[in-house]
Length: 324
Image 1 (spheres, rainbow, N blue to C red):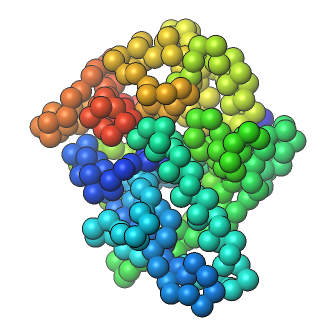
Image 2: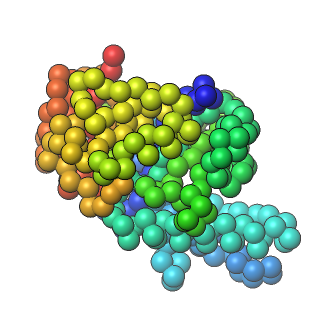
C-alpha cells in the first residue's frame, strides 16, 4: 500500500493578494510565472469572462509550488495576468462552471481559516490504481478528473494533459478534508520544445522536499491512521517524539506539542494546519546570504537546514535544506 505514491506533485499557498505574494516569493529567491486565470462563459451563449481563481507557479523538475488567489466578484484580475480560455461543448458547460465555482468556494473557505498552505497533492504514476486503492480502503474521493495545464514555451502557451483526484471527508464539502485539500495527480507530460518552466531560481532551489502538517496532540493517532490509508507506511522519527513521516509522499505530521522542536517559534493559527514546506538547495549558505540580503529573517534548525518564519512568508514557513 502506498507504492503508487512518488513524492509531492505540488503544494498550494492560498493568498489574499496575488501581487503581494509574487513580490514576496521573489524576495524569497524564487522565479515565479506570470499569473493565469480561466476565462469562459458562465452560461450558454453568454460572454466569456474571468471566473474562479488565479494562480501562479514556482516550477521545479517534477513538481511546483502554486500561489492561489480568488478572483473578486467584479472579475478584476492581478496585474500582468494572462487569460486561459476554456472551451467545452455546451452540454458540459454547466458542469465546468459548477466545478470552478466549487473550487473558488473552497479556496475562500481556506482563506477564512488563515492565509497560508492549504493544498498538498502527491504525485503518482498510476492515478487509476490510487483511486481503486482508496475506494477499497473506504476513503471518499471525487473520482479521476482530466484537465489541461498551461505550459509557457518560446513560441507561446501550450496546454499539457494531467489527471487528478481529490479526497473528500464525508462531513465536509466535496474536495475537502479538515486540514484543507489533499489529492493525487498524474501528469501526462511529454517533451515540449522550449519549455520555460524550469528556469533557475536565484535561491538555488531544485525541488520540493517536504511539507509539514501540525495537529492537536489528541488527534495525532487518528490522523496517522488516515494518512496511512492515503500514503502508505509511516515512519516514526526516533529523534523527535510526536513526529511521523510518510516518506512516499514527503509528508511529515507533527503534534502541536512537538512543533517547537521542529520549527522553533511557529504557532499555527488553527489546527489542523499545514504549517511549512521545504525545498532543496545546493548551497544553503549561499541561499541564506541571499535571503538575509533581501531583508528576510532566518532561523537555523541544524546543519544545512533553515527556514523563513510564516510571519515573513504570508502564513507558511518556507524551509531550505541542503541537497544530499
